[in-house]
Image 1 (cartoon, rainbow, N blue to C red):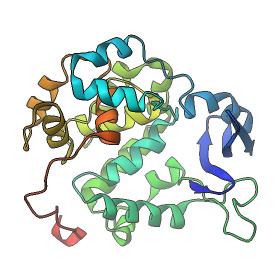
Image 2: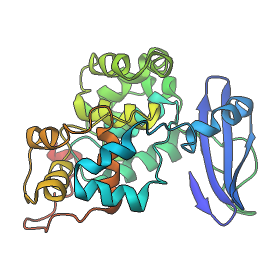
Image 3: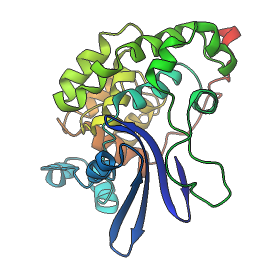
Length: 278
């Protein structure tokens, strides 16, 4: 993905083939252009991708149950939960981010895209710039030996999880049509995929407004600080505080991430790691 003066450019693998999508604002409208074998599919999926199909249901009334959430909703009610409809594309970088610093995970995944991705269809986002790259094909990642991941600072445990997920990529992507509960069960049936990974992937791919990433390093502290003034939190306390919003917990979390004050830092940051330490 690239974000620039000509809009947001995104390369993806659709059920109909690869596609490049350009999204930009034109007055009050959102316009979309697509290239590649999957362009028609991508255009049909564009409303979900930009959040136009996000249904906040009765959340405007439910937001009043806590003053912090009510104020955030007043300021940020235009925020939307988007739906990529690409489970494996969301899952692979999520696996790479397990138990490591986000910066390290992003560098690892970017390296994998450059090494194993392919040029995306369509023009470059800016004349003279390199073309976008498609995410690596699941069959390519599934066929790599474990040691091939080491150059991207991905040790055997995460590499094996990526390969297992990519071996059943078709079954995982079917979850888009089956709903969030089935998606969580199917994802968690894979060794190496727990509540955090399935929560991240289902929220991104299906736009599930209730998927909470249990097991996150920072999230419990943010929720407990914002909703209860408690600097340190646990998953259990976070879920307890989110109980007033059944079915909309991910929406509350997103509002807190976008606009709530974060707890004061009292400890060193999580250390950077190499595969030698994992």
